[in-house]
Length: 155
Image (cartoon, rainbow, N blue to C red; front, side, top):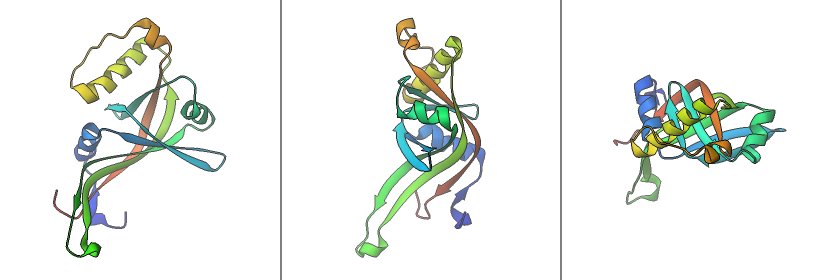
C-alpha cells in the first residue's frame, strides 16, 4: 500500500469493517473481462457468505473462475470545505482476495443463510422453508488475504 500510515493491518479492525458494512462488492473475471456486483453478505471464520439465485452471471462466472476479490466499506462521510480541492471523504475499507464455491450441503447452506441474516439483524437461528433452501444458492468465499485502509481525516 502506497500510504502505509492509512493501512489497517489488525485483523480485529478488518473484521469490524466487514461486520459493520452493509454491502460487499464482489469482483469476478471471465475471458479477461471484469465484473463487479454488490451483494448482501455475512462474515464468519475467514469466510464471506452470499446468497444468490442458482442461475445467473455470478454463478456462471464462478464456475469458470473461482478466484474473486471483494470490497466493503463503512464510516463513509463527505467532509466539505470552502475550497473544492480540500473536500475529502472519511471511510474505512477492506479489500480482499479468495476463492468462491457453492455450498451444497443443506445444513451448511442453512448455517450460511443464518450468518447472512445475523449480519443484518443481530439475530440467530432463523428457520428457512425447505422449498426456499432448495432454490437458493449460497456462495462461500474462502478469504486468502485482505487489507484495509482508513482515510487520513478523523472519523
